[in-house]
Length: 227
Image (cartoon, rainbow, N blue to C red; front, side):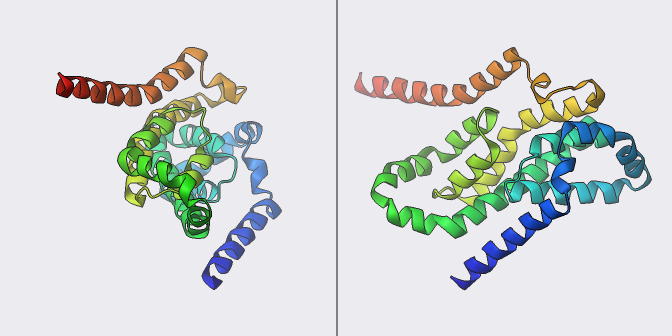
C-alpha cells in the first residue's frame, strides 16, 4: 500500500508542477503558432537535444493523461517534419500510453476486479480472446478518447506488451494525419480543420472493419462445420 501511496504522491507532484510552471499554456494552437519560429531555430541549432526533450515531454503528458497530445503531435510536424515527427510521436505516444496503462493497472485493477469480479468475467474473457482486436479497432477511431482507452485497458487482463504494440500500430494512421497537419501549421486555424468528415468516416470504417471481418469469418466457419 505504501508504494501505491508514493506513486500517487509522485503523480500529484508532477501534475501540480505542470500547472504551476504554466506548461499547460503552451499546449494550445495559438501558443504553438506564436512560438513556432523560435522553436524551429532551437531545433535547428540542437536537433538531437530538442528531439529528446520533446520525446520526454510527450511521454510525460500522455503518461499522466494530461490534455494536449493532439497539440504536441501537430508541434512535432512543425518542428521535425512528417517523417521524424511521425517517428517521435509514434514511440512517445505508445510509451506514454503504456505508462498510463501500467499505472491504472497497478493502482486500480485489483480493487476493480475484486469489487466487480462477477460483472467483469465476460469482459475479461472477451479481452483474453480478442483483446488485441478490440484495442486495434479502438485505436483506429479518433472519436474514442486516447487517455480513456489507456486507463480502461489497464483494468483488464490484456498483456502490457500486447497493449504497446497494438497501440503503436493502431495509432499510426492518426499520428500521420496530425503530424502532417503540423507541417502546414500556419494554415490550421482549428483542430477541426485537421480531419474532414470523409476522412473521419474512413477512420471509423477502418476501426469497425476488423471486427466485422473477424465475425464474418467465424460465421462462415460455423456454417461450413454445420454443413
